Length: 165
Picture 1: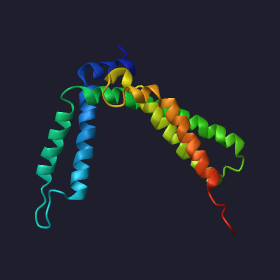
Picture 2 (picture 1 turned 180 degrees about the vertical axis):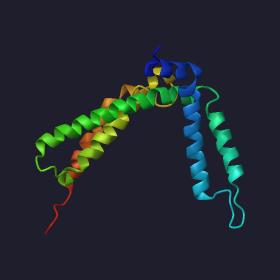
Picture 3 (picture 1 turned 30 degrees about the vertical axis):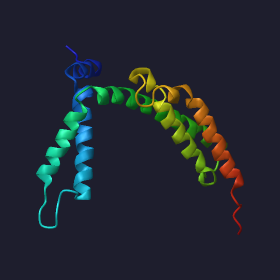
């Protein structure tokens, strides 16, 4: 009998690996790393790593209590993956129009595209969160906000003083 990757991933999904285990590990590691790096709970002669670990575990478990984080991760990470793919395609197309491969003159393009991918990743937030968070007006006017941002960026770029050599 051959076991496929699809079967393994589906069984992990049924076991809650993607909904609980991975979000727990992600939140725990980020909280622990921040607390450990800032030495917020430590003194010069006393390292409180066990307390830091307890706080990180508590925060990670509490954040998974009502499935809000699991639902958010289920929406944001797949969309982020698609956004990264779109970003890669845009960079390839930019390479067609810049035969030398020198993007230093157009480095702002990457920032604009990155912000666009981030906004696009959040654009469906309201479809599953109701009126909380970015729901409501944000989803309704997302493209208006993006166009306004592009206009402001264009004005800033045009109004910059040219570099003198």
